[in-house]
Length: 226
Image 1 (cartoon, rainbow, N blue to C red):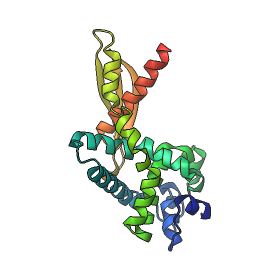
Image 2 (cartoon, rainbow, N blue to C red; image 1 turned 90 degrees about the vertical axis):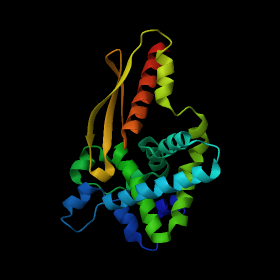
Image 3 (cartoon, rainbow, N blue to C red; image 1 turned 60 degrees about the vertical axis):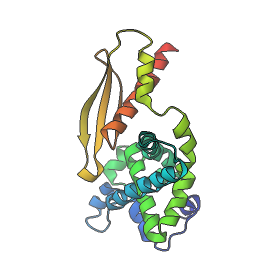
């Protein structure tokens, strides 16, 4: 854990908080009540992350309209962004998983790693306050702010522009499923081009899932062209 604390640049007063943040429900279930899963911390961390990012964008970009603020926040806090943070921290190697989840490749599952990032942020917040959590969010997430603002993160618009190079193209987004508790719903979306599936994605909201599906479709279509 010391190496992880070094990457976080934060030393826990209560190490059990960090251990809790890294304990997946599969491990907690197998412990028969001896360990608590990180789901409650994940719930708190999601709110902390959203608040810190929203406040930062609000204070630092007074000219941005609400729609752009929302889009940029979504890009910064989406699963893909959190997985990048997990990789930078090497979080996967510290996770406590049940035997079944371990054998099923859970250590590399994007959703598990993204959830763990939120849980760790909550653990830091509970241990050291909002200032400590904000420093980590600044280092690993808000550092990508400029790219999110200027790199064309609106994948749905980009996909629409891509397919409109030919006339008569019809795009349709279809919700294929959803899972998880009410406080942590995950939505699964497929995007179809002229009735054929060209990409799929998932997210904490239907809009985020549609953006991820559009991104996958762009990569697929551009790969065909190259």
